[in-house]
Image 1 (cartoon, helix red, strand yellow):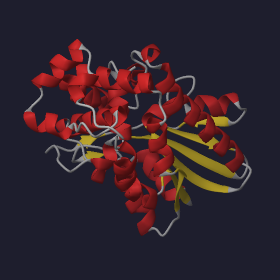
Image 2: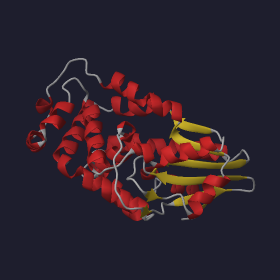
Image 3: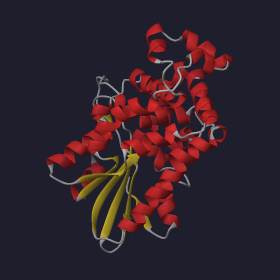
Image 4: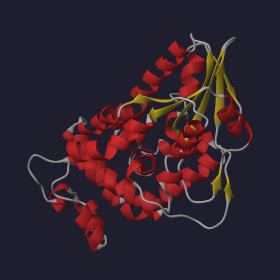
Length: 293
């Protein structure tokens, strides 16, 4: 799964909270996929997000703009206070009890790729960090190379809009619970993820850009294809990072439908696609789900 799609998810969905800004000169129009889950007195908009975007990408138009205006509350993966804590929690959880040289963790193909990396990038991959943390750092670098920034990502822009409108913002998870998913992956799974990420380190930014292009077109089939590449190679990670969380969030949505109101639920685009994406899960649970864009 890290062969292509999973590296893109890691870069764009999991490591973006640590990004710094950079960007592209020309305005780009985006029409990301948007759904509405509704009954007589409750409306929940489902927006798949990119946590980091290039400069000058305009996506708050049409149905998305209307959903932002209509919603009484924003639900993200992490509330703004939790997102601010992510860096400190990462530093706490990522440290190894006993340092281990990065080359000693790598199979031959990954080791060859590691040795080809610039010195500054190799130095950023500390012997004192867990395998999962090194994998996230590689994802961060891929997003940086793709010239994306979390400061202008979908969550950041939505947070600005709802804060300005004095509308509440909440989260489905905590920063610690998110990072603990990685921390508690089996050692074999962590090592597999690291080796796959390292093997394709030089092309990872291309995966991020391909994911971004599919998101901008609302191409859920393309997104699903990119996200599910090589999924069978790391089924435990897929189960923990995508499947289990989607089921929890689907349960939350079903329960929230019992209360009246209008909500915008915005989570990573990888959680919206395919038969185990939120729209499909909610449809299968008997709710009315309509694609708006």
